[in-house]
Length: 315
Image (cartoon, rainbow, N blue to C red; front, side, top):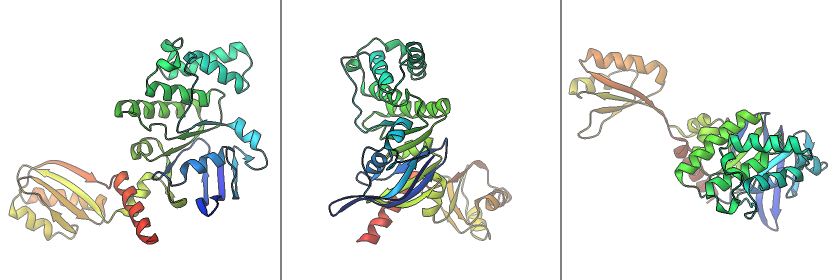
């Protein structure tokens, strides 16, 4: 649905996006991750034909961004980082205006589509209220609806949860997941909020200083930075016998404990093979197990490690 090959944008001597290449499949939720200034918004603007590329090529919904920019614009919906609404118009009037601007001329069709989306985003009861009276979270919901009113096959969302409180951000994430299923469209989500990517994205591309560091599933990003696998086992009591038996086990690389706690953090090579053997070892050493958890590096930890490693390379 989207393909970029060596996409580049320069501003004089500044390279905002540097030879970035990727493919996004139809129906996929794909995340651009990276700190502010990484080149995420510039890439989206090039794909949406709001900004020309210095060199490189891209196709969106089958259309070349350089040869068919009008067709690309018809095929995409876009939520910019700072969406603007007509605050003196009601929610319904905002939607009606943009629906007509997107070419939905039939009144009945337009009304049906607007009601469908306002109900999906729990705004139908507020349809006659002016947008200026809405909270920031509600304005963001209305802006997302505006971007998809014409049923675009591709949706670009640039920092959709930026500046929202945790409760509003979660609501927007839940609604984006619902929107993805309801509209069956391809979504490119640009964010530096790792929870957005964790909950929504099939794959992510990590960007920094205009470059692509890696592309993969969130789990693959974790594996890229993981130095091993860890099992957390909670016990009623930790004895020297249990600790010694575990240290002698061929499945155990390292055992860690904390003072005044009854949990073990056990490093292993293969968590699937090691877990049942380690549980068996503890039970045979008269240990009483309360719980077993397989720990993994958080997406945030993986992200920070990769950004830090990339920064060290360029110094």
